[in-house]
Amino acid sequence: MSYFPIMLNLDYKKVVVVGGGHVATQKVEALLETKANIVVVSPMLTATLQHYSQLQKIQWRNKTFEPADLDDAILIFAATNEETVNDQIEQATQHWQLFMRVDNNGRMDFMNPAVVRRGDFVLTVSTSGASPAFTRQVKQQLSEQFDDSYEAYTSFLKHGRKAILEKFKGEQKRLAVAALLEPQVLQWIQQQDFEQCENYLQQLLEGE
Image (tube, rainbow, N blue to C red; front, side, top):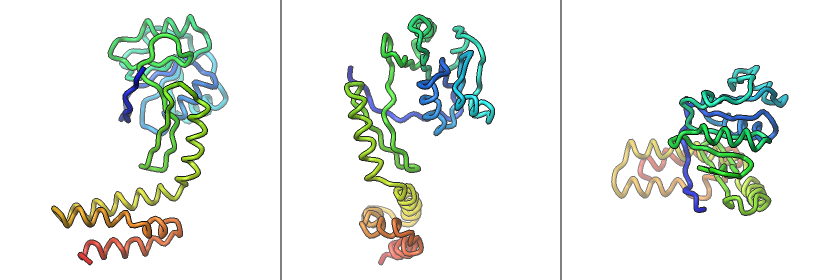
C-alpha cells in the first residue's frame, strides 16, 4: 500500500482512542502535541493516562466501547488488545472518518510516522510498516543530528522571514530570505548568541 504523506491540523477536533493500555498511551502522547479534543474509551487506563485525565488533557469515558463513542470524530484509533473489539470499532467507523487499528488487521486509513519535533521544525520517518526497528533507528539518528538548538533556529528563521516579507518584494526579498540560511546563523544560535542573529537580520533589512 502506498500512503500519502500529510500533516493534519487537529486543533479542537475530536479524536477517539479506544483502549487504555501501553499502545493507547503512545497514541495519546503523540496527540498531546496538538490541540485535539482527545477522547479515550476504556474501562481501565495506564497510570500515565489516568494522570492526563486528572489534568483534563484527555476526556476519559470509563466504559466499554459503543458505536456512539465515535460520533463526530475525525480520527479513530482502535488500540485494544482484543481483535473482536477492534473489529467492532472498525465496523462502526463511517467512511469519512480516518481509522487506524494498531493490530494492523483490516482497514488502515493512515499510519503514524516516527516524529522528531523541534518546535515548528518537524521531521517524520516511516517505512510504511515494513520495518519499525529501522524507523526507530533513523529517528534516533535524526534526533541526534537535529538537536534542541533547531527549535530556536527555526523560530529565528520564521521571525526573520516575516520581517523580510514585510519590507521587500521581488528579487530583493528572495535574496534576503536566502541569506537567512547562512551557516553562521545556526552557529550563533547554537552558541546562544541571539544578539548577533538580530544584528545580522537588521543588516539584511537595511539592504547591507
